[in-house]
Amino acid sequence: MVKHQPLQQVYEKQLCLSFLTGIYGCRWKRYQRSHDDSSKWECAWFIILCSTFSLLLFWAYFWLEAHNDYNQFNWLLYNRSGEWKDRTVPILATTAVGFSYITFLMILALCHISLGQQLNLYWIHKVGVLAALITTVSGVVSIDDVWGDEWDIILISLQSTGPFLHIGALAAVTALGWLVAEHVVRAERTKFHMILLLVYLSVLLALYMAPLAISSPCIMDKNSLKSRPDVIGRRGAPMLAPENTLMSFNKALQQGVSSLEADVTVSLDGVPFLMRDRTLKRTTDIAKVFPDRQHEDASLFNWTEIRSLNAGQWFLENDPFWTVGSLTGRDRNRIRNLTVCSLVEMLRLAARANRSALLYLRRPPPEHPHYKTWIMDTLWAVQRSGISQKRVTWTPDTDRGRVRGLQQTSLEKLSVEELRHRGISSLTLRYSQASNKDIQDFLANNMSVTVYPVNEPWLYSVLWCSGVSSVSSDTPQVLRKVPYPIWLMSPDKYCLVWITSDLVSIAIVIGIFIFQKWRMSGMQNYNPEQIMLSAVARRPSRDVNIMKEKLIFSEVSNGVTSTDEHLYPENGYDIGQYK
Image (cartoon, rainbow, N blue to C red):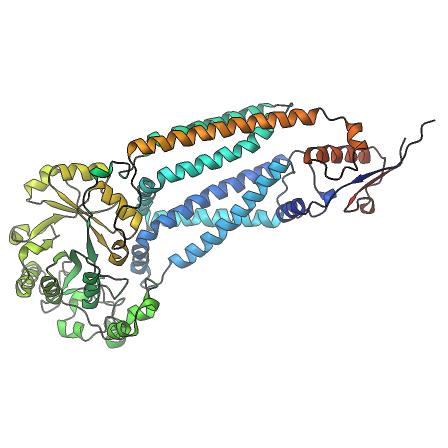
């Protein structure tokens, strides 16, 4: 007669696993967890989670690189709504929260897969994932409608970040090889496992060859690097003082700019003055002085009325660049008393500092008394200022025959033949219009290129490597601190980094698959009876624990013991006595 002794299955507390399954699926107890395959419904939710993560990653990257144009974005929305607010703050806040939340869920899901736990996303998280997905899709559609040309910043930024993003993506996909290998090397391979392996290897191969499609002007020999591009103060230094004011231009000169850029409008009595907006509402206190005329065109005010307006208080109140807190008390007092600047004042300042000027002229409306003479009014102001005409660059295409003494530039990307026909030797283009190839073609034909707006060091570095003559910037104080391109790499060195990273990735992936194959073959050699008899081992391996749990639950389903919760203590399962 064989006497069977009761066996006690002993488990150590698995706090980490309880945390993972508890946060992800609200399964805090051991008996709530399962190593069974995830249902198709939960697999679908995992795909939705991955899609949301990918979309949010793209969205977050877009806003990170679009920092160069935040002011332009706010200005566009101001022209639509008539109210100035920094609309990037709520967008960035929601993006940061949503991306952090979805990334956390992705990490938990991958840990579940790695530990062999069944995916079972809690319903609250499902609501959160859907909310993040819908919000991000809505944001993408809205930005495409309001600011569609800004998508170009993504492709341009890859000229700077592409080589580093390639290495990061290669490291991430290589690490995912652990999960892929764990599924593929199983004995019960299915068509799904083979498709998974094929997709993984295809993605890996694409990443290995990705550098062939990466083109960056900063991959060049150091000896080929041209001189540092000049920086033009775009409306002065608008982060340090109100735009288009005399103080703003003084601040720009202190930052070492080579030229001053301004927006010119002609007043009702023919005085050219500096104003970017069509109205005076945003940058003056016209709502207090002339409340009934705050929506009128700025050029329909005479110079006396314009000069009576305060042009600095709005800067202190709105703090459009979040820089007011860094200003000295003396600067704040000066800003409070600023008035609208005339063209003559700005040109005289440029002449005293031996600097150039770039003028953007806006023609007044047809009912304006100087509608036909606005060009001559501006030329007269240039002459009165005493600045050399060779230091003044003219942007309008109209009446170029009258301004032959001034430097000519085009805001439109024309062919070299057309530019020569018009007598133009320079271009002023938005950064999205000036590709590296275009810049090289213009430079080869002795055409200088100025690019705007350039506010970020990475963009300045890319354009520096491209060889542009100058850039127009809202942040001359930032670009001043860039004495050399952020990164510069010779083609041979880049090729070495590329090949080395690929070889390291290949070695790691092969090692992962070999290790997982050896590990799974070891699991297949376990005997269930040996596992039961060795259940009192102090620290059993994860694979032995998995097989123990499966054996225990199979006995439970055969009626050996009850499913009541009191038979599943946190420290172990009491199997009891059986024959």
